[in-house]
Image 1 (cartoon, rainbow, N blue to C red):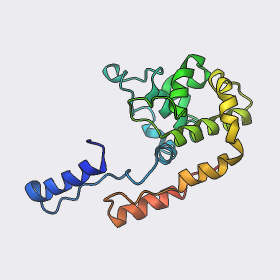
Image 2 (spheres, rainbow, N blue to C red):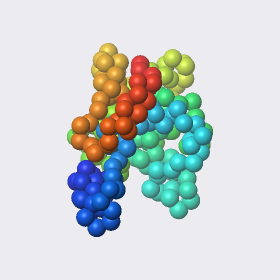
Image 3 (tube, rainbow, N blue to C red):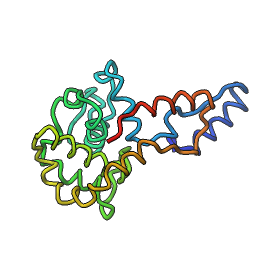
Image 4 (cartoon, rainbow, N blue to C red):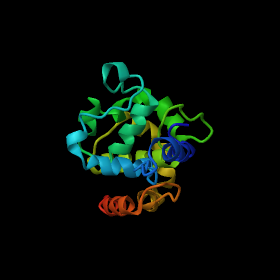
Length: 193
């Protein structure tokens, strides 16, 4: 609930009523997809060693490298950043033991992990962008190799689907127009496949 638009709306009302009438509470990232956020974050290398999002690694301030959250963040960042392996301490695409997690992130008939991860379409595009990058660099990755039969099914539409995700904009937000303009300008700088 705390990450929903409903909470944001309720909290805005609460702040206006009980805290400060002029306080404007909003999520700067709400209009964006996870893929867009990863693309923007990839261009902020000074923060790459400082952020964590792994629930298992919270107590040690680390990435466990073995959970759905770690794999999702890794594949979302990898197409945009050369720092991804350094951030995680290893290349998760080389770990074939992550295949069940990858399938859970991709397949609609699988139970989606109970963590904040990209949507199935974002994960699919991210994995395909990872595969595209790996092929360009002529690097084999065990996890990607295991997923090739699934990922190659719709590779011909990858560029169009990636551009759609990178250009999307949710209208469900409370972002003030001046911040919306800043964010839209930054999105124009994202590389598209």
